[in-house]
Length: 156
Length: 444
Image (cartoon, rainbow over the protein chains, first blue to last red):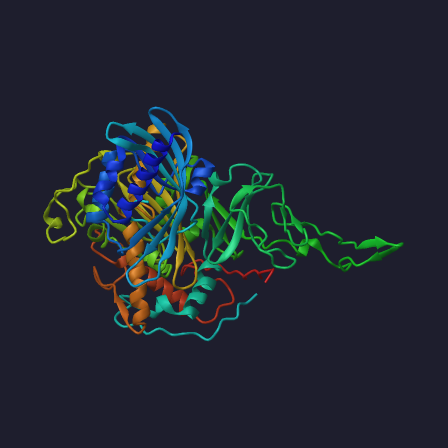
């Protein structure tokens, strides 16, 4: 992978994290292709080959529906998210596709409360090069955290 | 063997019967300890898993009953055993893996080993060590392995679901559930082989009873869960029935989906979103299944330990695992049936987006439970109002009622307010009282 591509990949990861950390949810589906997979899945299920995911979205439309649900229908305690994303490990790099992984930690802060480690895991990504830039064909968030502290509302 | 209980906290119950529940019922450490003893450790069958989780001999899973760690294991004869995860020797909670396959159980500390029925089979240096023609050490001659096995629980399985009890004198699982609830249990679990789709685990910072109450409360879904009301999955005017067992401890909320959209009942529901449509309608690609037999959703609360969910094509068990008076772990096991084709499996998985810790209609249940507990902590002398649909306990054919919660607390009071108990007669129905002695716990 040349420097320019790696730089573009880093920028893509950074933009994604900034988007959800800023709560700019309407922009979140734009990181994905129309035909895409986004999944937040316990490592337990992933490692055992069990298909259930905590959040399992199969199209950009579903991502938009999730955003609508978060903003308009789900009742929840407000909180900030802060993503700390490690350097990506590139597994495959072709003219169309980048396959990469990166570790992440999400810190949650509720109003009036200390910050806490909320979710720790890794991204398993398949990223397509398109005319508009890089886009996720797949982003799996496989998390180690054995218990979700009550609920998981925003995307990881 | 009797259990010594500490002096008893008495609650003040304002109002009639159980229509007002004292906040202290959710915040008292002493009452919580009594609940563990009387509901989780005695006279009640507690859910521990599904047979499909341990299909082969040697397969095991570790789980809990109340706060006690137990192992559910299939032995080489194919029988299912449940043993307490406490070594007879020095009390080590020896089983660390959450699931796996073993030939026997070996405690790492001194390598005491047990067969998969919990019998002690090996004690290193039991006969001592020979040195210079002399035998040193060893266990006393009268040490009998038969008396030093793991604590074995009583086990009941029904159509693939496994329950266990520390109380060997307990009534049968069928009597425990009662005929009306058993009918709906068998509707989901009719003997078809189950397939495990996966797990979700969350810790909810509220008293464990609040989750039972949440699923005994048909008043909230059409208000809290905007998703439900918009798509007609749960609305105050749909055909429904609230059914309890004779004690009022278990319940079924049975309902039939309507068309969704705006109507008389959506007026005045501030959470209703008339313009809400899905970009991807596959979330609600509902396919009626023959075994439903009419209702599109049946939510069952089996007291004290489990909820059985059938919401259209999504089916799961939800295991309540108390962690102190202020929190519980909520473990979801989503499953399907062996006869499901790939499309049906995909449908069940897709609809699982509605449920679990991130679910469109479940995430907010955990949130409101947390907020209730915060309020209880603040004003322990106060009481909740549970008067929707009256102050009585009765089955109904509508959902504008909190009768199931009142029923649960009528039972709760009966058990919790009885004097110190030495036998498991508490939970027995008025007729056919089951006498039993509580089996002494080893390893404590």
